[in-house]
Length: 465
Image (cartoon, rainbow, N blue to C red; front, side, top):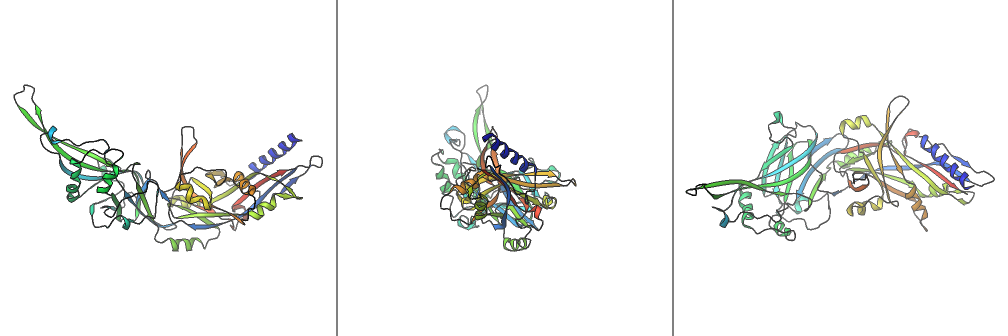
């Protein structure tokens, strides 16, 4: 009997995998001799657009600039960052050289992997000194940080106008911008030439003297830089006496060199995002009940709700309690061609319990069987040779966990679709999940889409005796 039960369940799973539309497919099999119950069904879900106030910023992937999108609104992205002093490095001492080291100049270097938008649209980047304080918390900071808490905007250090892609390859390094900093700053920073060596335990001593930088854009609305690295290049020189081979005469040699102060993972860097017209954008998007959207960074997510009462009722047949064997939520993407022209599609979505979003990313968690699951964009070719894009989420373990709770009084199970970037280890296991902070978006067919076959749909298989 056990083997027969397993065969029936496996056969039902095969049918579910081959059939894309199970909305109207409800089946039960109950051989009188074995009293096996098998049920294949579907549940409606509801969905809505959700205003995202912030994400937790990670320093390894930053964007800078302004971009205006007709669908998802304006994005302003700027950066606040500390700098890492050179640990264990000592500037030359006067006792060892002919003259004391002399500060020459300083540049802020921005290296970017790529850009988004118009590569020839001019943009101006301005650098201010954080003169009101520095970051104290060793954890992650929110992307809606207020620069006024850290910077008065009274100490402008430098500014430069450029385009993401250089005309005629004039720059020595194509995807790199050097912003000259003011001589006043150089004169102030030259104190580093005579400071003692920094160790790993007293880096805060440097941050107490130099809080950090606020990097923002003043004009330009058509391009964003995907920043790879940031560092302050402090240029200085010194002289020393070099003995001649014959020992009869000496020569004075001038050495021009530099020391880097990087914005690395050892210190705090925060990417701030602003969407000033989000209220009107959301109002417009909400008029179309066929579509929900997910837009990054820190813009709009989609909230998905499943009726807990409906789920429980499906598990009861003739007063018998069934087991949930499979639960696949399919979410269809729509307007993919149009979306791709404006913004790249979101590759991965994390479907996570609404109440768990904050702690998940703050604590840098990984998906669990209780609260979250990853869905990656897939596609299939239709009979008319068009391509349909969709995300699949396996909710069996998550829903089984909810059903296992005793005294569960909830009426709706609420989940958020969060755009994420995923890091893998050498064995292709997920090692890190971060909220997406690059320009990405996707339009999704809602739970109430006017075309029934396109709606968000939860397909389930139950079984029992």
